[in-house]
Image (cartoon, rainbow, N blue to C red; front, side):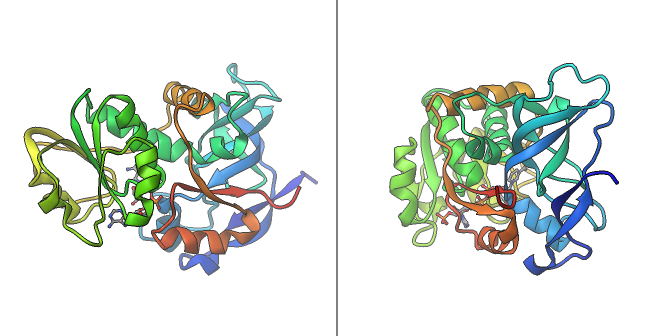
Length: 306
Ligand SMILES: NC(=O)c1ccc[n+]([C@@H]2O[C@H](COP(=O)([O-])OP(=O)(O)OC[C@H]3O[C@@H](n4cnc5c(N)ncnc54)[C@H](OP(=O)(O)O)[C@@H]3O)[C@@H](O)[C@H]2O)c1
């Protein structure tokens, strides 16, 4: 009998209660793949949308969610030269057999070595959020002295985008509830708007770039305060697609980007906020929390028990 493992699976689309723990065969890496013993993963909002069927790019269930991973390589498939068993790695998976399990298969070219001084929990929440933030700031071509508006600044992607923009010397403006303003100021935000109390489109002056992590009508409202030569980066699906300043970002795996980000985090130059670390045994609660839209930074998930 092949060895088995615990994983979270779902047979139907629906609310958080469709997620359940199953015993599954431990997978075997194929060409270009590695098998990782999981240390941590995270909840990304897209997990909840896939679970519910609001987005469908994993196809129909059953599937195991989870895009982020950190852990230890335990087996390598044919033609893998970049890693060997025992390596500590972090990165992204895009598969119907995702990272919500005791083990996960990943393509070697989506992973990077985890720096020794970056702990595995923080490494495990970084990949999707940090790659999206990094690639959004690159796409916006943010320069020293520019005014950059970041929506949902306190979230997983947002709090990292604030820091990446600040490191480029930008004047960073964020939308967030007042309860998160001190947190964001400490990360480098210069101006903050509590979107529950005032309209950012009325209180913010001309900006050079917008990173939109909220979408919908935030798009057209942001365009009103975006300079004629500004850049509008949509991560979430907004109503601004017809504008020539519109660009869409989709966070994608990049070992080079991950290595740069991991080193910044390991050196303490970028802070990775983990609001809570939960066990995969509590996955239903974790999805409910993520769907509240109130998580500051990231939610980490670790496998069951020691
Ligand atoms: N295109 C891509 O590749 C990509 C990749 C990752 C994520 N995304 C998308 O980007 C969005 C953000 O992702 P995330 O992981 O950062 O989400 P998240 O961590 O769940 O975001 C939670 C944060 O959103 C803030 N927020 C909620 N409603 C807001 C509003 N109306 N205005 C301003 N802030 C608001 C909350 O801050 P307050 O408590 O201060 O309200 C909270 O801290 C999601 O929709 C996600 O699907 C896209």
